[in-house]
Length: 410
Image (cartoon, rainbow, N blue to C red):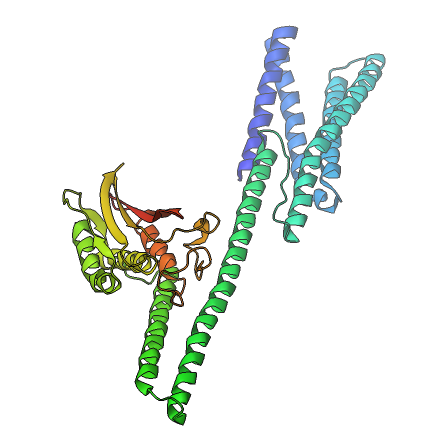
């Protein structure tokens, strides 16, 4: 027996008990009269239960064209059951014909009022369901911004809140899909451009050497080597980004001193800074806490930041790395005294393939980077549960800071 039937039986039993209690309180029947009342009520109640069970089993509501119609017919049947039961009991109790007719009229009036109330009550329910139906249809058409206004605290209201939550989730998913599609298109366009340009340059130089139209092939060979290095760096960056996007990049974080990573990065950038005449300095203290990190990945971040800083600093300028402990994290800043970044370009410097040469020309007038270094830096820092940001002034230079938490992110 399912829960619905048990509930119906329990309700019928409570109704029978309450009715008998009320009759005993008001009518004060004798014991035989009380048993007769109980027997009549039980027989009529079982009869109503049987008729109701048959009605449910037949499934008449499946033929209804609307929920309002189903609920209204249900109210009518309930009223008819009550009317028949009362008239039958009144007849068995030997009520006079006049009193029986009066009772029938009064019961018909009460039943009509009950059915009317039930109709309007069911209409209030179906209106909210119709609102949900309209919202679901619009949602199925791809209108993910649709929301339904279903007030209350009942099951219909809960369904409305669940619908709105689902619609919001789908809308966010749509926006994310659009963002990813745009990023994918920009990614393909940027990668194609950054591969096509050096390949065309390399082909032109090799053809010139092969045709013997250059007097000094050594210079062209050196240029070709730089182009090949540029393409190799681009390939490495693309592989790194693809691994980060797919989650395949190994990120085994173990507690370690950030000072050692900084020192290694400074050593790697020392030759480039020296050849350009840029002063390179680092932190002078070593009392920072251990940081859970993948040292090679953080080293990659620092190398990218140092390369950018040196590229955009004029000879005689300075590039400095500093590190401080703040709010349960270690903040590492790479600052330069070079050309600053325009305010309108600052929010976009961590986007993929964003170069922004117009906002921050390179001090060596080179062709510029590939627009992936800072994007990779952001991905690696965020994979560590940290954040990265930039501050810049056109007169005093740029500071790029990343923060790494002392606790391992879950």
